[in-house]
Length: 329
Image 1 (cartoon, rainbow, N blue to C red):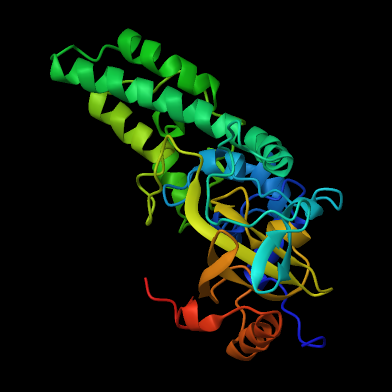
Image 2: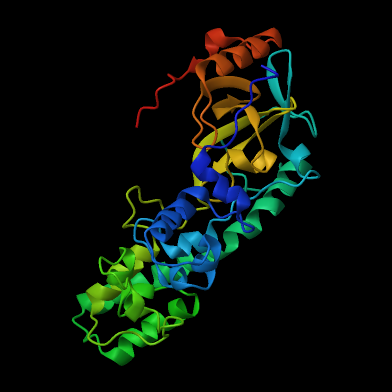
């Protein structure tokens, strides 16, 4: 197994190359849109300051492109997630306490360990903007739904008052861009989107003629409800999945996955690994093992070799549910 290592799936390398490490799945959809554009700028220039900066894809909202920046652990932070197996039991290397996964990594109370507090301090800042925007969007939704239910007229002044704090956060692009729909697809004309390029940035004022339904649709967009697989709002983005990576240099890392913030690529900064997947651990004892990783896509042989190594360290697989290698949605 020393000679067999896994690199990131090719389309996910842009997450590593991006200085902001924006979540590859979201970034990739904008890269596909750039491929279809008439721009001569490189992808990141197009995305940051070119015409791509005005595009807000419903299947991957620009809000998420901005918020979902995957944490790549620096060397001094890696030990917080490093795991050892002693007599078949999974322990945190930092303090030798039994592992429980998945758990809410942000939940801290009087019984929390020093390691757990350090992990929470590491992850919390990456989620502050998302949680702040979640609250703002929910407040605006409640106000708009209440106004619609009461038959309140959606005047430009009233809509602007509800939208103002969201616009200040860079949200509600579809209510401010007269060419919002046209930007989503590449132009079919020879001149491309030439006539749209005079707009250097989106205006702050809302478009005329909007109503409450338009505002609610824009809120749906920014909350990710128009995505193929909408995600829950008002939460820490935790998906309730324990994840692990067996580093190409030997160490084992584990954590709870936080969508858009903490993934398999986080442990080793996008470098190669031997195996990556999901697991469930209770009080240090392995309960379930899943060989799936969208970032690394491990093979069956590599997982079997890892399982044998774990057995040699005392893990009793007669009590472990090993999921099939074909992912069932």
